[in-house]
Image 1: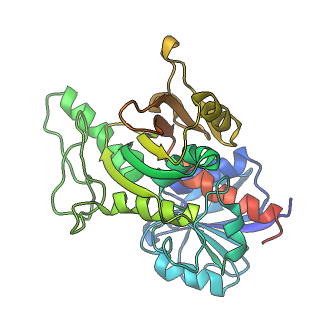
Image 2 (image 1 turned 135 degrees about the vertical axis):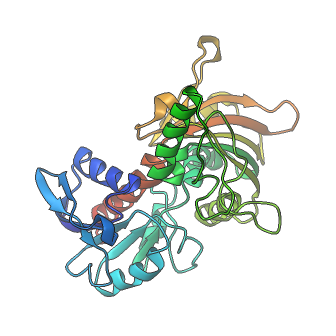
Image 3 (image 1 turned 180 degrees about the vertical axis):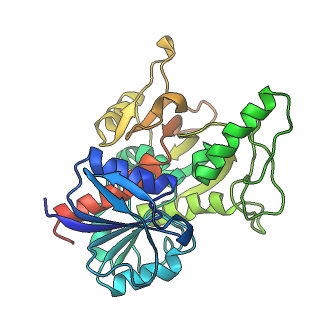
Amino acid sequence: MKQVRVAILGATGAVGQEFLNLIEERKFPAASLRLLASARSAGKQIECLGQTWTVEEATEDSFKDIDIALFAGGSISKTLAPAAVKAGAIVIDNSSAFRMDPNVPLVVPEVNPEALRQHHGIIANPNCSTIIMLMALKPIYDLARIKRIVVSTYQAVSGAGKEAIDELNDQVKAYMAGQPMEANILPSASLTKHYPIAFNLIPQIDAFLDTGYTKEEMKMVNETHKILNDYNIGITATTIRVPVFRSHSESINIELEKPVSLADMRSALAAFPGVTVQDDPAEMVYPMPLYTSEKDDVYVGRIREDASQKNSYNLWVVGDQIRKGAALNALQIAETMIRDGLV
């Protein structure tokens, strides 16, 4: 596979660190690395690929002689992604900045790799919950078109970054010590009110819109339509933050245009790259976030017919938000582009 020069923006954060882990694990063909972060992280030393790399402050001039720039996410993408493209790099961006731009492909490599050929320098990585859901739904969609999706997510604090992981850990320690739990991060650090997540559920991820839905919920709706290129699917979502460190869970109800046997559904899921079926109720086998953390696959179980609605089915889907929901998907995009000669 062709060797490429790689920059990682946000190299010191949770997703950036996962990029580095995966580059080593997958033997990604990185000829060189340029690790970028904010000014306060500049100068840090990070080991990867048998070398020590010094973190640099990210600026518009950071992308000269870079082939692929992996952006971990954040508002800085809007400024630095165009600068990286101008310098000749291909940007794979994990923020929401470009996802709904009609000129930017929104890609899950197992689902719509053909969209990569339409890029103009920037490729958007979908929302973590959207990726995990579509990994489970694409093989079913290929059996029978999906008419409607009702999804409720149970999202780990990893989705809110390293600070949220640390805060959950601190809150558990404080609670067990009989001390007050301090909350500064969730539902969102940018909001004026915060709640503890330890021993709690927060039915809000991101800000509310005038419709009563949150931005996170509408991301799942809009991104699913774009990725599948099917705007006729009815979709409604409820997203919930739960006191789990890593790995998001989703309860999904789908209505199909025609009946599909459970055996065919399980076979299609088992054959789909990146999906593992764990579905044996008699033996209490089903996916759980504790056991899917730090795993690459998306896990599907509790597959059953919806007795209340014709041609409808329920699934329980779990996947690591930092891996397939973020860093792994972006790296797979890069691998696909290298393999197909698009870099």
